[in-house]
Length: 425
Image (cartoon, rainbow, N blue to C red; front, side, top):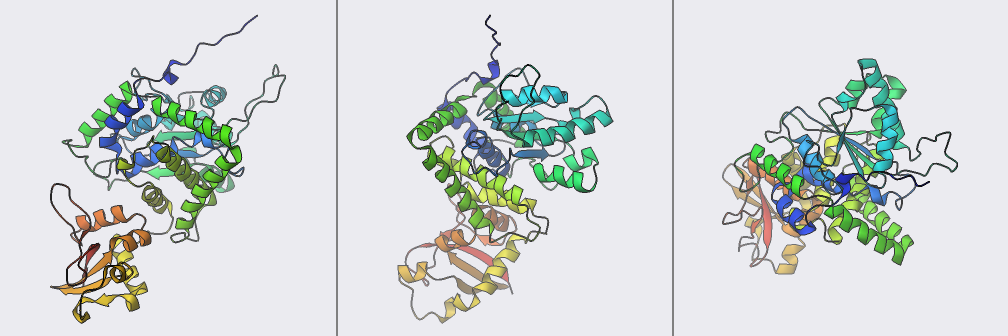
């Protein structure tokens, strides 16, 4: 007797990788949350090659209605799957029982499982608490549910969960003490705050009238283009594993270490190791997807995105962009050069190695830092400068494409570029 199962049509690729990239890029490129979700979507297949202490990661995207969280999550899921007939695209919803979760978990092994609206879980308030609580622990574990008819051990199931909700897990479950702590440590909560006028987006993308139009475009894209990015990623992953599985593991660890090294500069005493590990493996996944030509470089730098997410998850208040620049001035004050005291312009090598320049202007002074040094000091330099520009504290360069840096004044050096920040007296 042969037992067959109907294939899940949502995993059948539609479109091409090139079209997916071309149509998705205008909305997701240089956008913090969408780029994070896309990187995170590639984590699942890497987990079997990642360090053994990495649990199945879980992320919940929390925000009010109309913030674009479901569409952005569906865009991440479009890497692996899609369904034009459903609002969640290649995702599922939380309207399920705890036993049905095992089936979902198996179906999304080595991939991303996107479940929408966690508040739909359970048949009553009490049942909801039980389903949600058990789900978090079950998904974190690589084990599956063993049935009486199973003759062989249940295979380990590795996957990454992405969940959306109007309220965070800790409010939904209403657990206390150690139980709440254990749940919260397994589920990373990323909030789309009320202070974000464009919801999931940092800004309205070019060529779109508003955020709503941009998200409608994104919805149309994921309804017609899906599954090809994941297929390409797996093809390359299989090739790398066949060539040298240990080298693949080292490559993943190397990229994780790159992120963790940057985190050392901003880590607080309340930092969570599990959060750091989840973001580190997310960075590794994103970097591999970029190196393999799946996440285009034109969509922006990846490390600043992860560092911005990490900062948002810190329990202590995050310093404002201006305070961070002021701290830089205090730290490097002895190395900063006053422009008025310069006898002649610096040579290019001397300019590039100088911590910065201070120039008096009306109402205060300006800090000018060579771009390379500034980018090394502030991995999230793009987001930092955008915030300073919005506050009218950065001098930028106009033209067809606005640049966040400017040409260095000739009095300082004949060539080069600097980031220029206005500091009040």
